[in-house]
Length: 434
Image 1 (cartoon, rainbow, N blue to C red):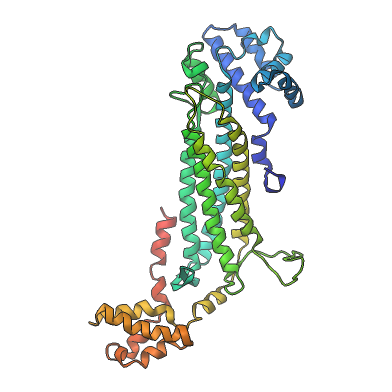
Image 2: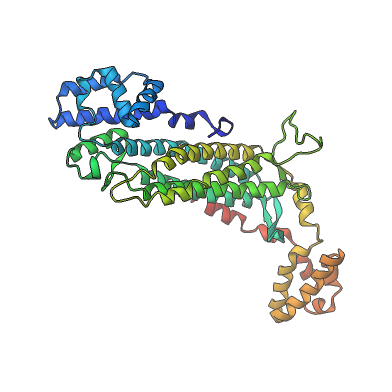
């Protein structure tokens, strides 16, 4: 991923230096297990650890690979340069390249997931804080983009919190899904390596042994992982779209923090644009780009092929780095989001009480008017507001079909905003006390 959308911690997981360090640890732990089984001399296993503090020369490994055309062999050759050819002759005993590559990839995904889980926690904290702050800040709810009935800004943040909490649960499961390793040799039969080696390596690297790995770890695990990243990205976009709508000039119920010295447009000095959330919408698309290739990686030829390899070398770093950046950007946007309660009330009252139409409809039916007739009566008065800017309450009070059933006090009661917030605490308890 380009540096503009990258954070150092996540980038480091995917660096060549990190990858070669994991390769080394897998090989060294495998040698320890082989020595314990009496397959290789203990002194040879111990000698491998002489490279424990070595900084592997990426350029040298690339130079060797330019000849071998094989990355793992290039690394093993470079390792032998550090510990000696005789000491290195038992390294990779009974193993195949996928043992190293697949186990490493899963370790990297697990480490990436740990960072992403912390990122989600920051988003959850920000959402909860803003939800509590605006628990009773009334704003208009919208369906199809059109005014519906009152809700609160706190409930808006609360539903996003619940969504992100589900995403955290999904990500924990996805991390568990890919936390497996395979040291099973060619075609995965353990013909040339004892399963105890796999158990030891996995234990030392924080993984579970893959129950059956053929020659590769099954890619349905990775498909679930990247699909989960895609779902999280879609949730980011869901929140970003809401903020972008709220920042529209005609709405302006909230806006991204505009810092001193910030410029919104090269041409129009008055502009304050939702650039961060627009950026988040684009980043979400990039993360979702990884999902279909990950799904297509599931179908491999027989015990293995490498059609998945080029895909994963790209989507592994790109999807996790992008999502890491996006989650932190989202958290910052939420933490600094400027809320305008007065504008929320102004927007809600734009159509002079029209948003209370359902309460009047229900009140008429409760007094014995058929639903069909009640709907016709209420809609007739509502359209006067919609089309001519009339006052809904005034129209109802002037309608003999309404006043024949409802008293002025009963009509007035149907315009009480508190009616719409009476169960906010119940919803908050469901979201935040679970």
